[in-house]
Amino acid sequence: LGADKNVLLRAGRIDVPFGIRQVEHNLLVRSSTRTDIDSTQQHGVSLSYTSDSWRGELMGIAGNYQINPDDYRERGYAGYLEYSIATGYSVGVSSLLTYANKDVQLNVPLLRQAHGGFARLAPAKAIVFLLETDALLNKAQAVPFGAGVVSMAQADIEPVQGLHGMLTGEVLEDPSGGPASWSGWVSAVWFFAP
Image (cartoon, rainbow, N blue to C red; front, side, top):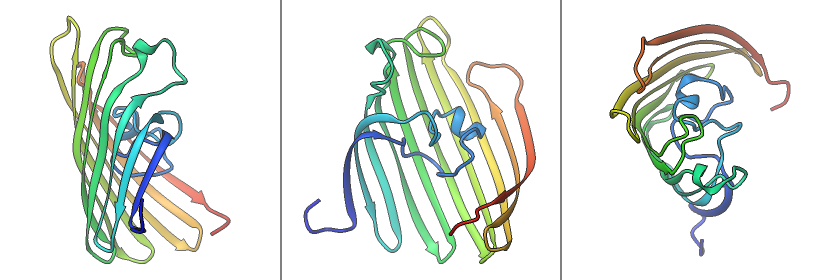
């Protein structure tokens, strides 16, 4: 956008800018907010900004045009703002609000919101901690207002370049009610190319 290399304007089918971007697209924080990088992209316009200390993105969501009919398309906004406190330490906030005439899961009109915070902490070159907590707020037609929360914490240790050991835990209190869901696992991931 103009001569400012810190600003990027995009249009098309875009990953929804919300929370921590990571390859584990099936985490509860990604599936419950519908913001994974695998299958929940939306069409719209996005404006992002990056500097030494700040980065952020705001997207106007026009809906997923791979879904028909139009009633199922969510429209609204999503965005995040992240601040780098020091090298290896950053904190951020995310916000999302969408409305669909028919939700793909509930098949009724749904106003869906998620608002929360996240942090990336790297106390050493080979150790990273990722944290995210989001409030989930839903208002569906003829259904009481629903509120919930979803959180995740992950420790990632890289003993040698490309080999990662990860310990992940997460919890979900779904806005539709019911008992809390807990999960945790240990992962080994090898990225064989830089």
